[in-house]
Amino acid sequence: MTPAMHRFLYILFLFAFLSASAQQMPERREVRKGNRSYHKGDYQKAVERYTQALTYAPGSFEGTYNLGSALCKAEMFDKAEQTMARAAADTLRTDEERAQAFYNLGNAQFLQKKYKEALESYRRSLLLDPADMEAKYNYAYTKKLLDENENQNSENNNNQQQEQEQDKNQQEQSRDNNQEQQDNNEEERDGQQDPSESDQNDKNNNEGQEQPVPAGISEQEQQQMLDAIQAQEDKTQEKLKEKQGVIVRGGKNW
Image 1 (tube, rainbow, N blue to C red):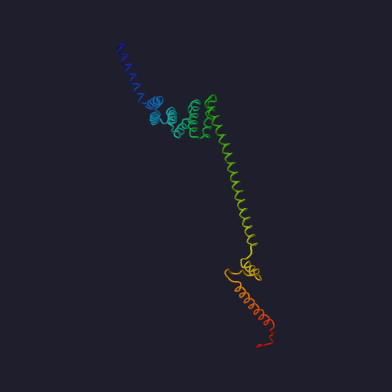
Image 2 (image 1 turned 180 degrees about the horizontal axis):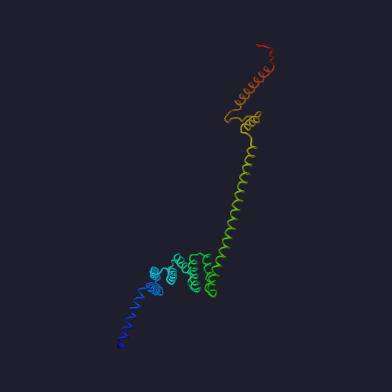
């Protein structure tokens, strides 16, 4: 067999081997396609490729990790968190790989404002890779935000409590004022004279006083009216004397 024939058979064998490998590892093919889309900035397409890769190899750390990263870039933070959590839980991977997974998990949680969860993810990343400066920075920054939020919430609670106390005091003051006003009104009513009593007093006070003279009456008519009033009063006095002088002895005296 000639050398040219040997070379041809070798190339044919190599091509067959690569083709068989590609058919046996479709997950790798889809991951590579996903990587190309990711670097081009086509994150939605990358998500599709990585998702397809995981249908061939559901336990693939690379496929899971890359899918989580693409989901985060596509701003699907909730799905990114779930996916990256699976990658971080893969205890068969190296500490460095899991540290990166926890770091990205923290980023996905932070972008959803899940600061407590993000802080814990950064902490676990640092436990696996204490030298990671980016994880240290994110941990410190997240902790600062949590402390500020806690202080703000505490201040808001204090303000709310003060407002409630003020409202309570105002309500009590309002009740006291209403009660005081009610007491004052009762005192005023007690001190006011009964209208009937007032009319009677006015009547008594007016007795013996000269009555006003109606307009348009002459002096002669006025004198005649006075004489008539005086005569009526004399008759009334006589009747009163007669009545007062009656003595009843068991029967009629008439």
